[in-house]
Length: 313
Image (cartoon, rainbow, N blue to C red; front, side, top):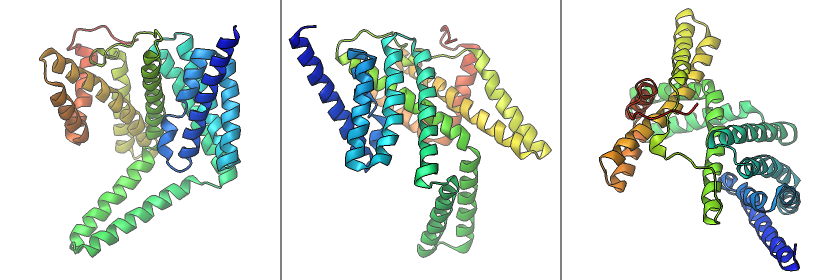
């Protein structure tokens, strides 16, 4: 390697480390940056190799620890070192999008587990505190409604609704965690693809969204979840009910994505203007009734193949 190439590599690495460190420091104050700060290391590993990524992670952890404390620096290791390098290696080795998403999701899950463990041991965080915060927020909301002059009957209805919401959030915590893991992995993968394509890298082709489709076999997972939930409720077995509810919720979201792909396919087929497509899709997703219908559409598409496409194994 020539001196010019060495200099270029060092400058590029230093620049990406600086961006990564900046994201990590800002994340201590604005957690939204947690969604993007693995990306500089992903780009570095793909362009310069695994060794450069490891060194970048070490330096970023050290710098973050210096500026915002060793605790935050330790958490940075999980999000950059585990997620970033794993995703970068999957891209560098040209794994398929499905395989990359699956492996990166495992890395995100490990990172989250490590983060929770560190918070439990060092930060003194307890999951019970989360429910206490939600209960406190519910009490504050009820008090606000009372000050607004709502009748006691209306307040009672709102209190019951909020209590049910908190209880459902507690039951669906496993499903919520799983969906969050896959969403974080998917977001980072799509963003990494966008950046690397802009830099001129040829990546494994990703099917257009309108052609995403799962095998009908996955439909049995949705049916199994609904069946377990029904049996658990009928027999009065909370554990079976909770397991079924979580399984059904996960598959409901999966098939809602497939349903959205079906809708988008027909938007494209009938040349619906792009602005109208996005507005209609946002309306559907934000409406609980239409969102459930979208999920059912995805389930039926798995068996009936409305678009006449091959499926993802």
